[in-house]
Length: 80
Image (cartoon, rainbow, N blue to C red; front, side):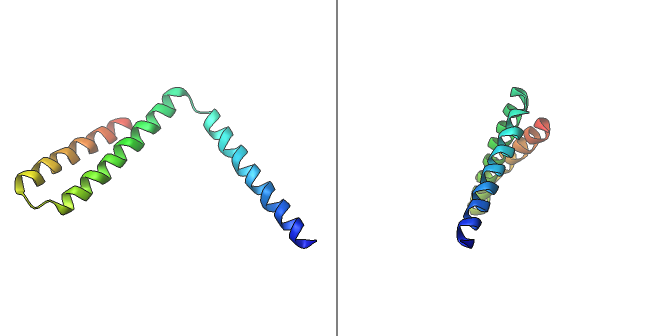
């Protein structure tokens, strides 16, 4: 009997979390949603560039990646 009670409690918590998430996303304007997507895309690109920069050995390639990283940082600052 206790096990059934627990599963209902967990199910209830999951439904509550889902509804809270839905309310948060509903309250965002299309501009805010677009800004968050753009920021997420830029941050993923930044991580990729950092990973490539760690592995790069050619000085020119490293310079190009550093420049790309600086550009991404500027774009991220512009989105915020």
